[in-house]
Amino acid sequence: MLVETMSKGGEDASAAIRGRLRATVRRRRAFLVAALVALAAILLFVPEQTSAPSGVVRVPSSVYVPAGVTPPNPGYASGVAVSGVRCGPGVRQVPWSAYAPPCEPVWHGNNGGATSPGVTAKTITISYREAATSQLTALYAFVPPSVIGTNQEEINTMNAYLNTFNKTFELYGRKVVLAPFQGKGDFISEDLGQDQAQAQEDAVTVATSLHAFADMSLIDSSAVYATDLALQHVVTSTLYENAASWYQKLSPWEYTPGPNCTKTAAAAGAILGKQLGGLPAKFAGSSALRSKTRTYGIIYPENPEAATCMNEDVAALAKYGQAVKAKVGFKFSLTQLVPSSQNAVAQMKAAGVTTVIMSSTDPISPIFMMQAANKENYHPEWWFQSYFAGGETNTDTFTRLFPLNQAAHIIGAGNQAQPLANQEAIRAYYLGNPPPGQKPIPSFAFTYQSLLQFFDALQLAGPDLTPANFEAAMKLIPKSAPSGMFGGWNGRSGPYDPASAYHVVRFDPNVVSALDGKKGAFIACDANALFSYSNAVNVPAHKQLWCSQSQGVVHAKTSYPVPGGYGGSG
Image 1 (cartoon, rainbow, N blue to C red):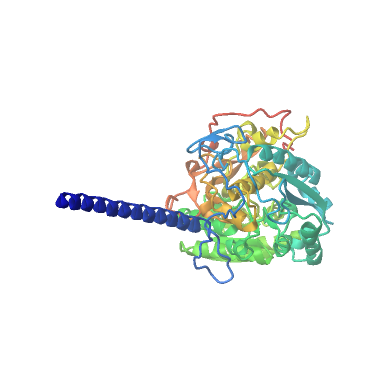
Image 2 (tube, rainbow, N blue to C red):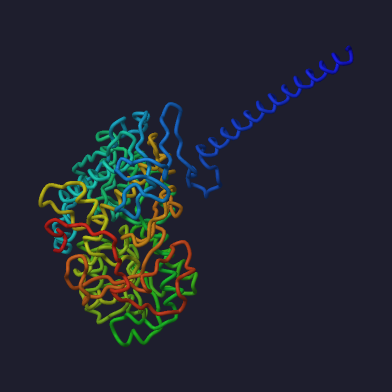
């Protein structure tokens, strides 16, 4: 009996011990799980501390959501977005954009209110500086308003796009509002390094009077003005393409849809160096130059940013064993462009250059350069490396302003224009319900891509909208869908501009443009292949370009009606 009692007592004691051990194991497992969750949260929300060059700000690996603010819903999660799209794996926020962020189910909660200057619980303010230039009348003599548009058309177009994006992108209880103002700075003078005091005054107005989170002055901006905005801690989107180092040094304030000129230099090196280097100048306008092996020269605007871009072109060509025989700067001043152009072109001809690289090219200076080339009886190939975002995209109308006997020999990075009814930028404009009869600004592609990038980042930044989260969000922009109108985008190619891949195009004055049904259009080359800015693996070696309009035709799944036609047919 005693033995039996002791046996039972031993069994009870063993059971109790085993129970306590199991409880201890469960507690330790729970602690371990909690620790792992906490560690994951730290890894997710703490900025990535990787090494960086001197003067370059480190970029956080993900966005941060502070306590008390409701986190965003995961992208691609199940649910319905504010756009009405049913979200799921691989679904974008809106069905009409190749560049939209991951679809996010409707968010409800606390957005943190005034998380940054220019941000409240209900609004995000962006500014637009209306052009102030003593040279505007002269500018319109070369690029008329029917081709480039006016300030009021820009404001109208931006408001239509804002209407669309505000109702279809997840902004966490906020909407973006536009605050236009009449600037005091002269953007052309600023490009020459002048009027710096006025540019600074305009930047102070944006920060302290308009209290804007971001500035979207686009073509009416300049590198000087953008730098002053950064010093005032205002996020800035600019169409002007500076070197990647410029954006890094001004982080987290400066952005562009891209490609920045570090990327376009890589494209120039790949196409002119790897593919076309050592071959005859097939696209030159004279038989004498067509019989010669390509030799390169660079013409660039005389300002510090353009000079940096020119040097990156030289380095990119040298990577493929191609030397630059002549480098000539010119002043972008309408009163000096004629003698500057004559000097630059004369030096190119004297150096025996077959292929002129127009580095950091604006829409106006090529008119003067090509006129000077005609006077010199000089008919080279022209490689266009655009100073504006998007390269040669929807620029058919601009290019017809050039002497066509010279324009017929332009090649560059860009995209063959698609019919307006197939362009997502047109779809987005009319979704904004503009007043009847109001058409988009002729240069709508510039406006659209800048606002699209901005709203991508707003959604991906989450409800706690800060400059740091905005910068982190830029890296999260997903790889674009095929056949987008601006080439490839991918946030991992940034983080200051998402441009990741490009097409090669050539201007043909005899081809009818899909934009407006008039002769003169950029057409696709190399079977409309998409080449990466980061490497030239799929760029063919030692092979002439083959170009035709049929290569660049994109068969859209959906077309969109264009009420009353297009305002930019000029």
